Image 1 (cartoon, rainbow, N blue to C red):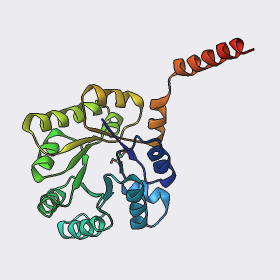
Image 2 (cartoon, rainbow, N blue to C red):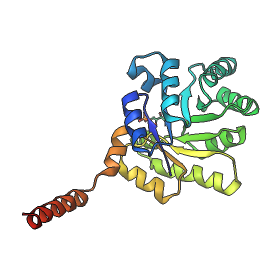
Image 3 (cartoon, protein in one colour):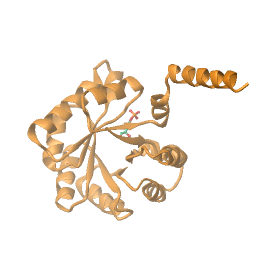
Length: 214
Ligand code: E4P
């Protein structure tokens, strides 16, 4: 499983990258707005740290606007992946960008039907939103599993990014289902490291060592 960080916060990215476990980053307009910094400068800085796929989302909703923004974003760094929301226009733009060799992450995927169309249009990644489906009473992780099944069954050259991940239970399911990538909030990566028995074990080793070294 590849680990992407779902944030535009430079400190969070630097911290997780410094551990040596970071494969990529996803951002979205809400995450960028939260940082209150220049969009393109932020993406450039993230790319320079990660040196792996960094998703930057278009704001335009029409085909021409999406293409224009996608080309501008792609020129920031070789690591930029253009994030395009799943719409009729977005699908056309993805297909066009595929032919221009610009990688696309089709985002806001909420059904297997959308997923297969995104794969056929040449999306490099598809992002099913797990947590937002949970929020409306669905089993969001099931969609991520279905997306992975479609790709494995038909051999599309697309990877699944399980997105909108809220907790470590989601991560366990991503692992169980063999989903390619999970994009995680910083706090979920930290939660993954925790186990009370590890802490208790360290305490016991250290106290035994102290007794022995009196
Ligand atoms: C994915 O790329 C999105 O940025 C993200 O996972 C959205 O998650 P949210 O539902 O927590 O906003």
